Length: 259
Length: 259
DNA sequence: CTCGTTCATGACCCGGCGGTCATTGACCTG
DNA sequence: CAGGTCAATGACCGCCGGGTCATGAACGAG
Image (cartoon, rainbow over all chains, first blue to last red; front, side):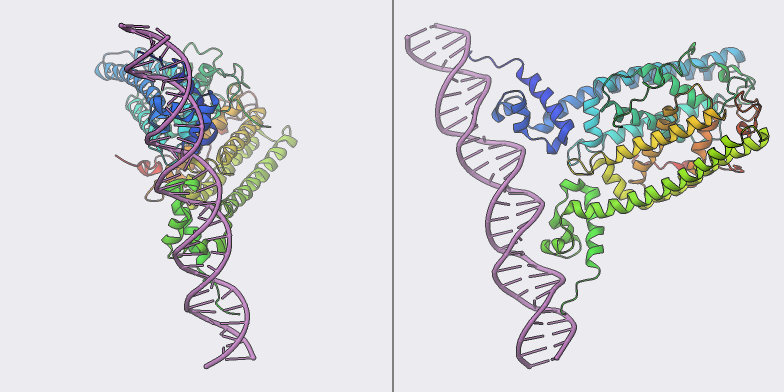
């Protein structure tokens, strides 16, 4: 009947807690600091949450849920395309096959763009998952996700190898470590970034670089792979209409901090 | 005069502390657990160290010192080669230039092999620096090193771009994030690894992959870059005599843990 | 206005751990 | 063997911070 609870309290506590977790980690954060930051008392905290960990669990669950959604979606799309390719492999012209393979790359890039947006919106939580959750139930969760992703990327590349759309002399997991590693580094950098970098351009550049390699002369080799039986198009201009993907705002793409 | 100190105590304490730090982080580790693990009392700890942090500082200083030595050595060698190249750029034949550029890659790979050995020997310390030092003076140290490395690699690639030995349409720092990111991921994986993976093969494969890209057909393009004035050789068989670098023991190269 | 309900407070309790120090006894010297 | 030194011990102290709960006050219903 009486005394309606402050409707902003829960949100205020969550925000303050996130900031405090970033600063001191989950174990290092003091509940009194969190409540003081939003003008409440320690007791008020326990009206809304059972513990620091419970609060963070809420936050992290929202993130992982969204993450899982994105991942399922991307797997659904890519696997569909792979099945499609495998089924009609003999019937499709080389050019058609190449076009489908390119669609895989586009899907991956687009999915990664969405992923990076999510990273940006939750960069504080990610920071905590990476560096600030020792001794809690969340310890290791980030790196388990990393392992999963390394594996997923590896699986994808294995499929592409089977289709002759990817060099077969590289262990698939190496692609995973490479790609995911880059994402780990930016994810960590986002935590310190002042302004939001152009994440989409970054993702496009990255995929293109991995695909084509660092050596110059990538614009000239239209030579076919043996696996795809003279597909050719994959190597040429692979990602999107791709135009200015790489080398759009070079400085902004990976923000540095400190001198 | 009397009662000589146990000569093994310091080492035993350090070892036990490292294990405990990995398990619980620096703040989470209890001094009594450390001393109990080597059959000593809490007081004994303070005979040898001022605090947990002081102990870990010793350990970490040894590692960073070695790291710095390796890095200085690699910079000295690579910069020397770059100066050499820049000075004699017009006088050298295209083939000679390409040969020098390839030497840069070899140097980098060899330096990375030594780096990975160091990672392996100190995988416990690295684990702590990554995940277990929140709230201590070591917080962020790992990621500062990562940033430095990203920058260093970026600088290298910038030099190579200037020489036409690296595609110029990629922001240099992107190479850094890519390469260093992969190292971060393995460094973390080493912490959980049961057996020592073939780190040298891994480093060779990685550099080669970044250089040549994932697309098939990398064996065929001998097309020249404009910067190096028809150098060509860089793209062909770039790293070492390279033979079986990639695809030697594919499963072992990036150890997985858990199912 | 009165009363009951729920929110909110912060003093308090308590367990855990870093760090200390009086005491013990192992070991060396003479 | 006696005396002296110093490594080693572990009981103890004090602080810190998570969690509780008696108390008070804000609010709505009647």
